[in-house]
Length: 81
Image (cartoon, rainbow, N blue to C red):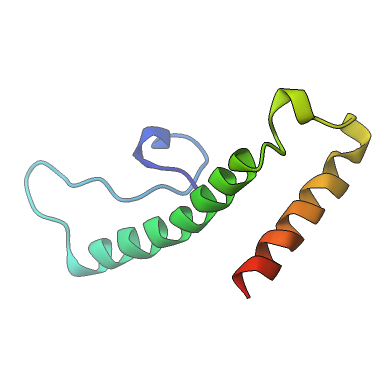
């Protein structure tokens, strides 16, 4: 899922407002839900960077990357529960 900057790629993006009309209700609803889901991902990325998990000084070997991210996500979900 991407923002409007990724229109034309293979990503799922919000619907752009056509020049000749306003967005229809279902298009507004689609954009609302799309942006709501993207906000969750953006907040998760912000938390990871705030914790310096992805910071270059704290980066672990590439073969432990999946384990590191899984642990960070587990801690985040635990914190939100």
